Image 1 (tube, rainbow, N blue to C red):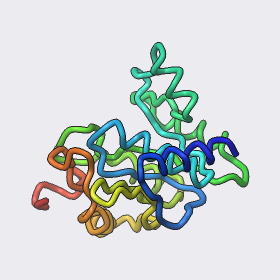
Image 2 (spheres, helix red, strand yellow):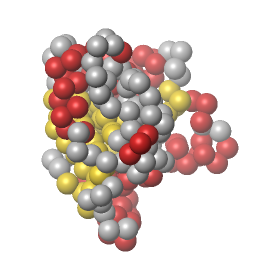
Image 3 (cartoon, helix red, strand yellow):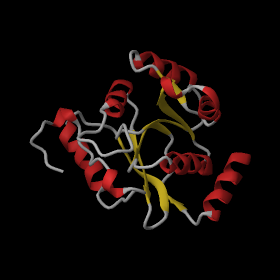
Image 4 (cartoon, helix red, strand yellow):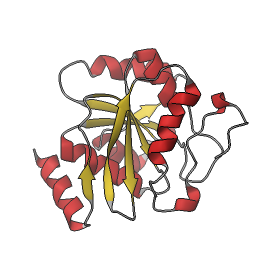
Length: 191
C-alpha cells in the first residue's frame, strides 16, 4: 500500500519509531496534544499499520485548502450541535472487516486547560467500542499504540488508566499538556 510506504519513509527520515499492538476498532485517544505535529505523527502511525483513523474535527475548519487536506487524510466533519448524528453515520459507514478508529483529541486544544473533553468516553460507552490510547513522546522520538480497554463506568478508575499511561509521555510543548482529567470526576482531583 502506498500510504504505508510513504509513512514508513517519512518516519524513518525524521528518525521517529513506532511501537505497540495494532488495534482493530475503537475510539482512539491521542495525547499529549500540544502541537499540530501530533496530528501528522498520528496520521503516519495509522498509515504505517494500515489503520483508517477517522479523526473528528470541528466542521468550522473544513474550509478552503485546509478542508480539502482534512478530507483527503480521513478527517470527519463534526457538527458539535449534533455529534451523535456524525457518530452514527461513521459507525454505519465503517461496517466491515478493515481496522478503523474514531480519533479524538480529548484535550480539545493544543493549549493547557483544566479538563479533557469527555466525548471519547461517552462514545465508547454508548457504542460498546473499546478505547485505544495512542501517544507520542518527543524525547524518545516514539509514536505508538498503548493499551486498549472497555470503559467500566467508573470514570475515575478508567481515567486512572489514562493518567498512569500518559504520565511519562512528553509532547512537543510540555507546558501546554492538559493532564487527563474529566469534569465528571469533580474538582477534588489534583493533577
